[in-house]
View 1 (spheres, one colour):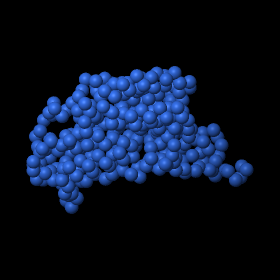
View 2 (tube, rainbow, N blue to C red):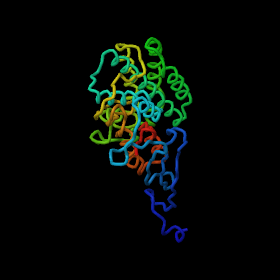
View 3 (cartoon, helix red, strand yellow):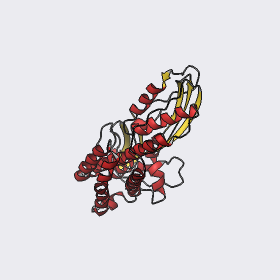
View 4 (cartoon, rainbow, N blue to C red):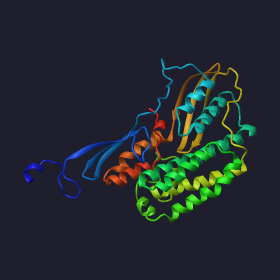
Length: 317
């Protein structure tokens, strides 16, 4: 045996074993569909890993020969349908960037319904992540409850959202009482608060511990905050583009999507989108995977990656 294994890599426990490169996804319980996670395993330990999106979109550049020609309404549909986990956020982002070209400022008549629709999507998105967490940890009750609430909330009126508030707060309370949940998430997926790659719930949780446990409670806190904002806002309404005419110029906008800031800059010529550049939180967060999984046991590595709430569709190449 010594002779057979003498040239194999030596693991942290001193054993010499074959290292295996193992793919997880693009369909794997507890990870978003469309995400391919490749881990190099030394026994049940991870020596290195990387993640890539198999469904992410490409952003149209501004270099010569890369011009596109799309009317603004078609572009709205293109961007929102390309982001199935946050279509309202990206539809709003496109509306704002296009309206900036026309020099339109925020209109109170549209700002309130738009803000309410964005916060409603934030709640639904965080519930979708909770359902995914339940699948990963084997909590069938969490998957079922979070999925049911997510479906109810996606198109709920402000009145219905108010009616669902006790159920949402009860879910958070139950998670706080769930045996062993904290011990399973505490210390997993630690991220430093000063990382320039962090956005959204991940950066906000970094100051509260920066681990999977902190990210869970950050998202629960955001659900509560979104409910409070919706109470003060108008009826949620899908963002619609205001009349911009046949303007030409450039514009840019930023929206805090459920996964963090997304930024869009675009160029219009006579009301047609000629080119655009999109920057998303997940395009930065996917690069965190390698550092999170290295040296971890396999189960902890998968929990760490899941806690990032990566949307493969929001990874821009």
